[in-house]
Every structure is written in structure tokens, then in C-alpha cells.
Image (tube, rainbow over all chains, first blue to last red):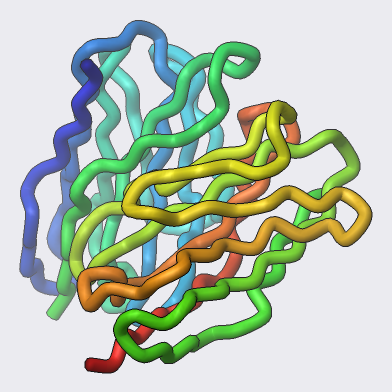
Length: 114
Length: 112
């Protein structure tokens, strides 16, 4: 069966500090991978998605970046955090389009920028 | 273009009574539709999915949804609410599995 991991679960960082959140998927190959942000009391905002190693599409211009160094690893980064970067970050994966379409979500990372 | 409307931001029901969470969609293509549930500080869990097979879809925890193309709706129902059903629910549409459009969510409260 497939499993998706995210870490850390919670993170408190000062403004201007760097960020690295990691997501890994087990039990499947060549998944599509996604990073979402959920601000308090609000819906999901797609930040990045990837259809393969080194292939990243950005949906929202911001000070965040994403990388996919391995097939089942997706990393969200920032060089300098802003207060507005606080939120709940969710990683998700899906099969290649044409097979099955649903997304599967990780447990999330709660980021608080102080 | 695709869009999703969840008509109620908050629904409150009593334990043991039926649940109805409404979702309407707009899609240029034949859509796939999903309902997800999110408990506080947790990831989203897939409740059920419609992918052009049977229009009445059964999911986990007693939930089901009916795809009505003429009404562009995909409402989520459950005959009898349980306290553990209190959570945020998201309706999602995708035309072909790459662009996922999420509704704003409906918060379900279950009163004892």
C-alpha cells in the first residue's frame, strides 16, 4: 500500500529564517506531487506541483520554492520566511493522469512564523 | 475552466439526524469529483469519488454522494450523523487528473 510522510509535524521559525519541509511517498512510482498551503480558517491554495524529477510548476508567485530531487521526494523551501508564510502545509500525491485521479494527502506541517 | 461552489460554509446537525452538504461544480470537460474530510490539524482524507461510473457513489463512514449532471451537483449525504463526523469537508473537481479545483469547504458541527 502507499504511504505519504511529511516532516516536521510542527515548526516555529523567526521571520527571515530559512525553511525546508520534506515530503516522501512510499509504495508507488512516478507519482504527481503537490504542495498546498492552508491559512487559518481558509481553503487550500496550490503552491507547486511536479510530474517528474526536476519538473516543478509554480502556481503562486511568492518567496517559496520547491524541488524534487528523487522520484518520491518533494521539498518545499524558503530562503527568508515572512509572517504571511504561516499556515498548514500539505503535501499530496496522485497517480499519473489516465490511471486514477484522486489525490492522497500527508498529515501536514503546521508552520508558525514569529 | 473549472470551479466548485459549496453552498454552505457551516452546517450544524444533531447527532443521529441526516447530513446534507451541498456542492455544485462547473467544468468544461467530463469531470471527476471527490469529497474529502479534514479533522483539525490533520491532512485530508478521501471520503468518496465519482469517475464516470455509477452516479450514486458510496464512500467510507456511511457517506454517499450522487452525481447529477443536469444539476451540476455532487451533494454529500449521510443518514445519521455521528459526533466523530464533525470536521471540515471539501468538494473537489478535476477534468483529467492534473488540475484539482477545491471548494472553500463546509464545516460540519454535530450537536449531542
